[in-house]
Length: 451
Image (cartoon, rainbow, N blue to C red; front, side):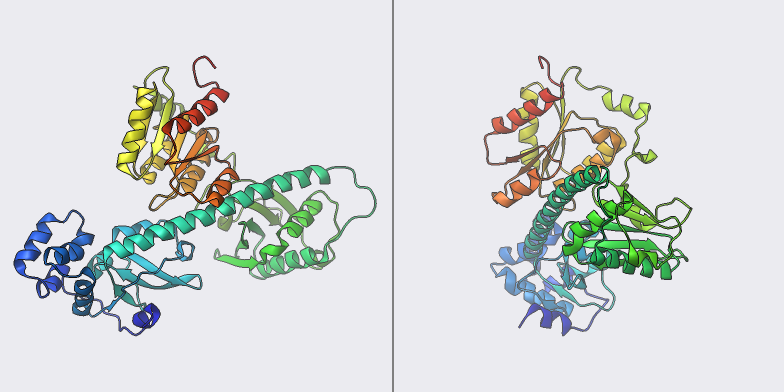
């Protein structure tokens, strides 16, 4: 029987016995008490109790699921993180010992290791099925989900950088004097016309085209303050960019757009983690909330500045003359090894095992490093996401960064080097290779003595 049939054949419950009570009828109280006292992570309780009772964890978990009245998922599928409402939800599911089941770009259900904790976390879904499984299987699926999301993000960012370079080239070329007649791309003109027509029908005064590498989204704010969004086939990306660049430089005719009788139609190319082109047709110069939702995309945003007090605090007590390296790796042992490695070589290492703690310290200005060494795959936030968050702030834009990973896939390295990240080093390589990259990057920026 497939997982889908298991999930969707279940009637939803909202009240469950405790996990300990469910286990008490499957293993002896003596074994259960020993398991409760010895388990380090409550999410491992079922497997710990099963092993101490000399039983198969799968068999015990299936019986626990039955006690809960839930389907048992003997195999846990990888989820599509981009289908969630926000990236932060994945960390909440992990903390609750659960994983979302996704399909066709939306949430289909949840697999958990304890439905009561799922309820307490506020993640228990209404009118969606819930199944039960072992935490070890859920954890494995979560880690693979994070890896796939990070790889997809890497490819998208590498594509964005390539497109950014192409756009800059087009900007230069299209700023040259025009020879001959103005050009028109009927397909691009029609696509823009349809997107603006829809936005305009809702009373919008502007819209933003988000070029995401593998897709194009257009977003706008309706007259009553609601957010609107639509998709455009990614295959027309370059044609759209070329056409809009020509419009911006008054080098293209727009027969379809002319039908809309737009007032003071403007095209603005905006940089940032995403490549955004803003189209507006009103005298009021504002950016829709949809454009800047969830991130500060724009250079020059006043929130990206760090005051002198923060800078002074960041330098208090630091080792004078020693270059500061921030190390971010969720593997505590590996982070400590790197910390000692850099300390021995005369650096001031600042280790973090949580990417969220690192992001807070770096974006607030409480820690100002000379270089960042960061793991690629981390729960809740990949190294790529962390570095993007840091580089959104002025203080972090010029800090060199190195990605570490145990992933031996050549495509991963190619994708990393296609972004704004400065270097890629495998965790299984000699640490001196990492140090050589660090020295080279700091020397190029005059951050090492004798440079």
